[in-house]
Image (cartoon, rainbow, N blue to C red; front, side, top):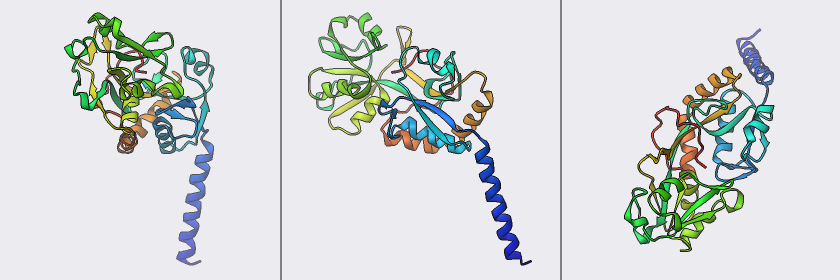
Length: 270
């Protein structure tokens, strides 16, 4: 028996063994919104879709998306009833699920027209006075920046916009088209739109906590509380593929802050 034949046989056995190991692992079921760009889109182009596939392959499991609208009550009514194995983009440390180490950290931003040279630095900046300020509506309430804006006397200037689906970018288009003077928007959405448009300036909100509300969030993968083995596998995958994750986020112009690995509480950024 020739050495060439033995080498080919060993290679074949290695490949077969690897294939059997892959088959032995169940698919990784990822709950994802079908219409929530830039995070998740049914065609798989969202940055969380791409990161989920990257992490699934890293741990040797086939990614399978379970399309579901992620609205209020989703974790209780669907995720906790085993609709899927993981959720992408949940705040690190969210108490209702087990979370990985964060895979990115971002911030709310002031969105203005570059030519206006406004670029406010805080919710108390005089540049906000007497200007129409856009905020997104989350379910029935205005997004969290409404609280410090109201505290600083801007309640009468606030204009609400839908936040989901095809209307998610309406608020950014309104700034661009001069229907409002500025907006305060979660960074990944603002960066995604501004990166494909012209004339918008993004300024990170400061301070990072105002009126007791955090405006920066570390985002992680969420899973069932009993799935500590999956948590460990995904933590290793996030560390191993951090450079690839950052490239995916950069391709969608997501404003990134340094990862400090500290939980950001139980709220959500969107």
